[in-house]
Length: 576
Image 1: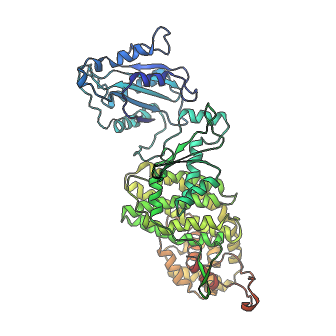
Image 2: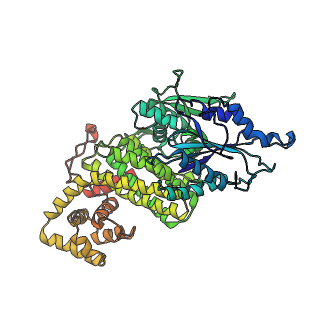
Image 3: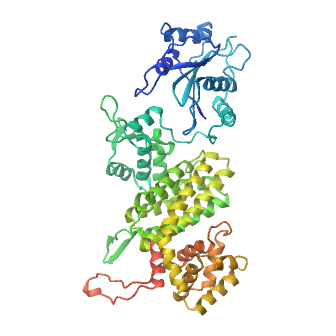
């Protein structure tokens, strides 16, 4: 049950005309009263002999009874109450009782016989509108302070009593929900999402890792959106609106939405806050000598994903440290950008789950805590590199690197859920948990092939080699060793430890560092988690080294050789 107290108005007849009218897109059906202050108010929807003017005069009577100078300017109170998606259709009687409870809880009509006059109108299956005039019968103003919070609290009780969906209380930072008209229109057009929701995702992807306003607007245009900007007489840009090319109103005109109407953090001022924090270019400059430099090509999808693992780990640590809230809020915002970047460039095998993860985490990416965006430069840079590296193939090193960053992001979103819960951000915590579910599904899909290959290689290791790595595990992690050695992922971990040793690293030292990064007891597979941490720490490839051929000028040609784990470590440091 979702109540919303709207801005107060000054024209009772104007709001009644809307509630009893056809709606913006002919979505209002059978408008009629389900309850009123005295149970006997005239109903223009069901009684042909009654007019809107009669109902307006009745509601406004206590206001008009005051001396003109004492009448409140904004005297019209308006609250909509909507059932959650999936709830059963309530009867008029049930909606009437809900309306009476809401006006009592909010102080509009507290039952003393001298409350405000009000009426509840139903013009759709899933919601009602309550209109009231803010002068009591005794001429005093009602005590409706914090009426929105009070309505929320009452709706939590109503949900429990009526067996409805328990909606997590909001804090005013959620994106605006699609209206009934938008949902019905999307259904008629066969859209999976409303234009508002499609535009919100498109704009978020355009923001992900953007360095300048021009780049942001270029991305909107490249996504095929219609973009309109608003400028001051000085030529300064004041705002923007976007529309889907095929979404038009009754007059055949595109339906534009401002950024702030899509989500609070998509307004131009809020986007500028992110951009003003700065972001490094994702392409490194290569010195050719004699003062000449060229921009190198974007990193590969695999190396861009590997590079994203380090700032993602830093984010998980920061969230768990419970230190600077402004820095944490910035990291959460940038985590949303990283998820958007991965969803935008993912392969077909994980695309749907990653888009759902990004869509869910959108709610967890903002709160009332002011983000210090300069603290998230590294994570925004990682999102930018992923976008400019291009689409991932989803297999080979691309798939393994994606599994690595998804494994890390799982820890980030779980830490985000804890952080929000500790700050009493119920909706954001729930959204982070939902995002984690989708990330787990995407991870399971993309990690299957590389882990299967690693397990196969681990099973082919000589018995003495496997025993040596098993002894390392018992020495470094004695309390977890038997669990790990019994897991299906042990073979992959053994292969990874062996690759690290062949590359010149100390397997015991690496394993100790990997295990110290975070607790492991809650992991579905301790071995799998350690595999990706070790690959990240040692920059190990997940497949057998291949012969690498590089085209270079004859004067600087070098002998090609197989790529070694050490090469990958050096390349990984360069990318980061």
